[in-house]
Image (cartoon, rainbow, N blue to C red):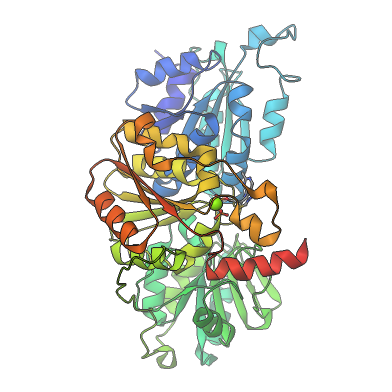
Length: 541
Ligand SMILES: Cc1ncc(C[n+]2csc(CCOP(=O)(O)OP(=O)(O)O)c2C)c(N)n1
Ligand SMILES: [Mg+2]
């Protein structure tokens, strides 16, 4: 017997490596949830749909593809911000939305959750996904599912699958695979781009490689490492690409973010006579609000299917092909061997009874990070402070570093840890961002996961305060350390002093359950990058 459309969708998700589906049920998607409960996939219930989408995004960034299932209108529209973020940040999330049945829609009735013509929801998602499909025709539904899943993977973008409820149990029709073959490089273009880059590298006396977020999304970290080892180049990362290379690698220079990033990284990058930029997106955050001084005349930039060298372009060159061809063809160039140890040593930090500061907090976290830990960071000063965090070789740093939506970290950490339960997750989040989506910590606690949530509590929206202050930046005070009383197995700590923070962090590291540390920071204690950012943005608005 042919599988139903719902069964086929679940089996293709499983085949693509998806083991969990996040979301909140509703009557338009309930039949799909029933099938889900009978399948090998596990449903992870969340408190809201946007957190389900952030969790699926964290899951996708950790293991290649993430999925959520929600109801029509109220559920799907709740996900718009998070899916737009996945689109902006290139994360392959499969959004499955239930819908009124094809038969129910026939006379255009006013069914609950309707907010306009039934096609509107799909039209909204057409703008923020790489493909939308409505599975209303059993003849082509299986092919539509195959196309959607492969588009998400190929473009590293979210896709939207609408499932009318009277089609969930309809048998579909297997159609011979007619998928268009995956994108490929143009051999002539690739060869010329590699040859010119090789030539430039041979002439260069002080080249620097900048690695960006696309290297992570395309799973090219190993290829990057072999290229660096072969070329012996010093390497910086952009903020959105942070941790594409282990941040304790001897050739790592740190995060380059123009005038906002560390000075020693800025100097090395801006004094380079050749910049090899791989998978870098030129957004305002990564360019340090356009304080970056990157001369196109010294640049080779490979990303988004093309290579740009100085002021000319080689079209149809995929990043992965360019990196492997370069690695295979380039000779190790002696002048690139830099005897100086690039990585910044992390001095041990002695605790005192002084009030805890962001600088202290980051220094201490640097000492405690292990290769098994990954860091998930929210938007706010924690993101800028994290520039100085050094994630280990196999660790990872996940953040909404370009789209910069608040509320990303706690749910994305849930998704990341569900995807890789052996990794301990350290969550960095501001008090304001925690108030948006921190409720999802109850889901992590209930699942027996053990994230350590560090709340940068500066009593309000400090990022905004530093740009333009007013009473609108104040928020209500929460007793973060008491959330365990509500959320179940969750240990809470408060820390005002350096010693207090050390004790809380040690206890959290020892605990087998989830922990939250409420770190009371002064309102006047911005990270160095935040101070520089606020100066820039303050002038603009
Ligand atoms: C969803 C969303 N709403 C609003 C903003 C604008 N915004 C950027 S940072 C910020 C303040 C964040 O406050 P908090 O989480 O406490 O971090 P802090 O800036 O205090 O370190 C705001 C409101 C945003 N980035 N995302
Ligand atoms: Mg705050």
